[in-house]
Amino acid sequence: FGLVLRGFILRLLMDCMVLSIPLYLAFSLKSPVLSTVLNLCYGVLCYVLHVVSADSPAQTDKLLFIPFPPWLHGQWLLWKPETSFLWVLLAAVVCLMYIALFSWLSVRAFARRCKGGV
Image 1: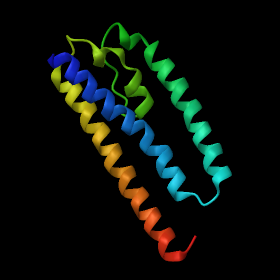
Image 2 (image 1 turned 90 degrees about the horizontal axis):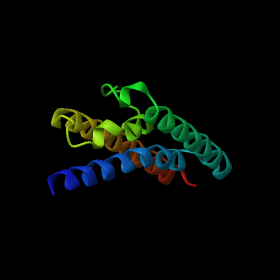
Image 3 (image 1 turned 60 degrees about the vertical axis):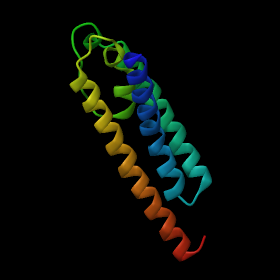
Image 4 (image 1 turned 180 degrees about the vertical axis):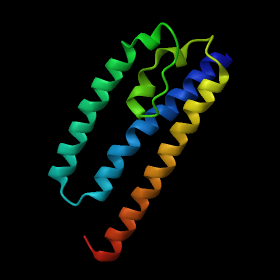
């Protein structure tokens, strides 16, 4: 049960971390077209890095910690039962830092837009 709960919480944090960047772009850019184009580019980048991360030699040997959302998301060793709790905790802390940073930036962009008009 603990492994399933750990996996569920880590997956939830990682998904929120990955989504925090496009949400920030949507709040900060005034042009819907530019926001859509940048978010599509970010989505392609996330896909490529996720695939590269999943196919890396680190998957069979050890964890290669690169604190960028799609890379962490693709590190299969984070999801295995024998993974050290410290690795999982480090990944969760990185997720929380991304979520907090981009949430704060989004709120600031939204507040600026409300003050200055649409």
